[in-house]
Structures are given as C-alpha cells and as structure tokens.
Length: 101
Image (cartoon, rainbow, N blue to C red; front, side, top):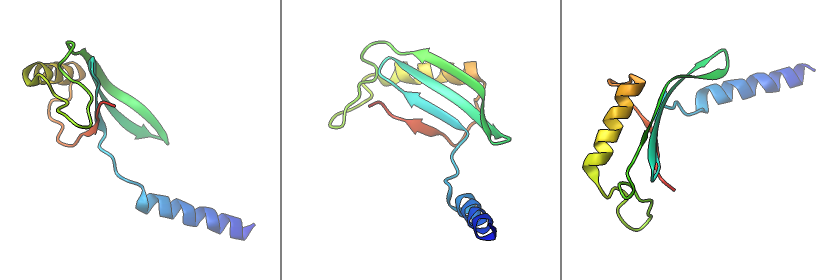
C-alpha cells in the first residue's frame, strides 16, 4: 500500500517536471478556414476562454509536403487579423500552430 502511494507520487513529480509547457493560444490552419482558440487549465480541466473561426477562400491555403502551403499571403493575413480581433487575442506572443494535413 505504501509502495503504491509512493509510486503514484513519483509519477506525479515526473509528469510535473517533464510535461511540455504549451502556449495557451492555438491556431489551426486548414484549407478552407482558420480557427483560433485560447484555453486555460482550471482545477484539472481545460476551459476555452476565447475562440474564433474565419473562412478562407478556395486556394488561399493548400496542404502540401512538397510545395508551398500558402498560395495567397494577403488574404491569409487578413483572415488571421479578423480571427484575432474576434477572439480578442491581439497581444499574444506565443502560439501553438497546427498546420494543414
């Protein structure tokens, strides 16, 4: 019983010191939209604080491992700016980004 409790404590300490610290704001880039989310942990749960989704015109962003993903830079930047405005995350410095697949 004591051994199991000790093992659980060791595991919690290991996770505390080795778990990656991720930015609270994330951006997902998809071929037809971008999604922006700001989340916070509270009492062990992940809560979405702010979010926005902006559509992209066809051909602005095309998933590719071999070529360019961004086909039209200006429309992508405008959509990103609109999403930042809607979500109220204008002064974020660290982002997690999910690229198109």
